[in-house]
Image 1 (cartoon, rainbow, N blue to C red):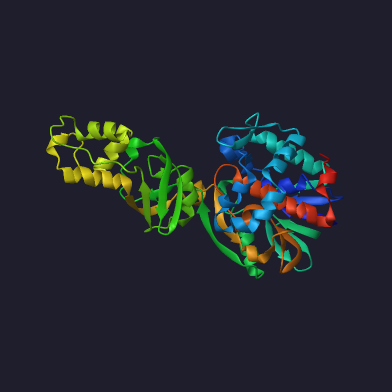
Image 2 (cartoon, rainbow, N blue to C red):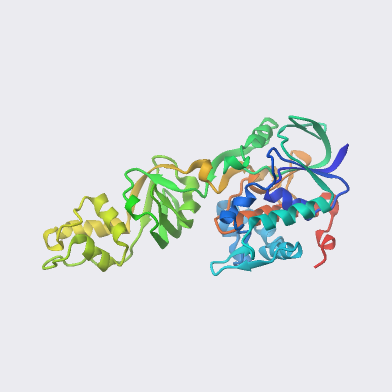
Length: 396
């Protein structure tokens, strides 16, 4: 049998496409034993499906490539995605921080709705079939069988959370076909540093911290863990955190130096109160600069106190590594955007072959932006294949 459309990958992007595209005979192929495994763990199982912020804010959430998908995001927006899920019977709600979730807080509700609609739209799903080649005669070869297609959509994701089946093997196949694939890096992952002093402050978090790695700069929340730094700001810049790179954090601004003469409090207690920062965080900082926390302020040279505050203003660490793909929420790198027509997501070198979602060189911030891109890129293909107007498929 020759299939109208074959989708490789039963993750978010592939299922979004299948939930919007009606075909006579479609096929989804996935190497896992069950579909949507990564989707089920998004938002810690609650599925942060998109973000409710103004759509004009979206492009800047995807780094340097965000401007290249601005029109795509505007056309297939967060509002469109929310309307689609509501139409599929998944009511949503928006938190104060802008993150959008199903009201049930169950990722399984999102997955079930997408699967049911995909099947109703003419797609069947073959699991436990790993694709090993795409041949020039418009066929997909798996470890079990060969399938012919009219249209092929690659939606295999990257290498993040490999336990969910993401191994990057499809990108190796494409490289062998002459498709430019940019180096894969773990994105949205914790950063580890040399001589990390904040194990005692694990769980402490800070808002709107300035974070630099070489020339890369961002601002966002930082979480101290027992092993290193995490939180949205750290996750956002983590793809640039190579071993040996310098990580700089600014925890305080415009703080005047205190007086030390006649102060009977310990350095730890005084600076905790003076700076209004968590005690265990100050403990770790004093450890980093080599000051005994129990010393009286009056017995410590003012220069050492100034050095401690300067450290908090511009704290430097040498990166030792990251959480890697095992802890990465998303993969940076992938199919170069130069290989794709970004209005249709068709490959320029291979007619009738498309690529969507995380397998392409787009990675967004945490907060629903990566699932939004999976949806938006899928909708571009849905509108293109067979010139179907998906708005007529599901009238608003």
